[in-house]
Image 1 (cartoon, rainbow, N blue to C red):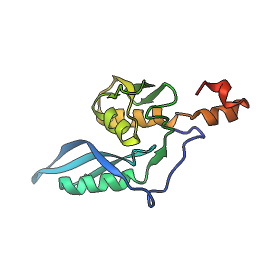
Image 2: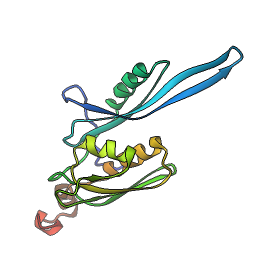
Image 3: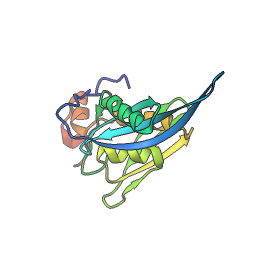
Image 4: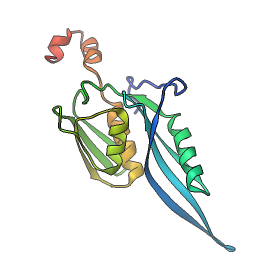
Length: 172
C-alpha cells in the first residue's frame, strides 16, 4: 500500500460502524499451566468510502474487541466508491492471500466471502463481485482486500494523471 494515492484519514470527525471479522482464543503454556487470551480482528468503516482494520489482543473478549476498534481507527484509508460499486477491477495480495474484486451492476449485491464481505460492506459498496484465492486466513484476507481497495483510483485522478478529459477515461 505504498502507492501515492492512499489518503490517510483522521478518525475524530467521522462516525464509524465496526464489524468483528474473527476472534481466536490463544493459549500460552507456562510451567504453572495454560494462560488463555483472545485476539480479535475488527474492521471499521463509515460506509461512505472510508475503511480500516485493526487487531486487538487481551485476556477478555470485550477488551480485545475494544482494542481492535481503537487500532482500526488508526489505520484508515479512503476508497473511491461510485454509485454503490467500485471504479475498476483490482487484485490485492498479502502474504499467501490473493483477492480479486470487480465492479458489478446495480442490484447484484455484495458477492464475497467472509472476511472480504466485512471489509467491502464497511466501505459502503453495495454491488461487487469478489473472489478470494490462496490462503483463507482472515488476517491475510483482510489485509489483501485493504491492499486492493488502496490501489483503487477514481476516474478524475486517472484523467488528471493522463492529462485527458474525463470522457476519454470512460463514458460516465
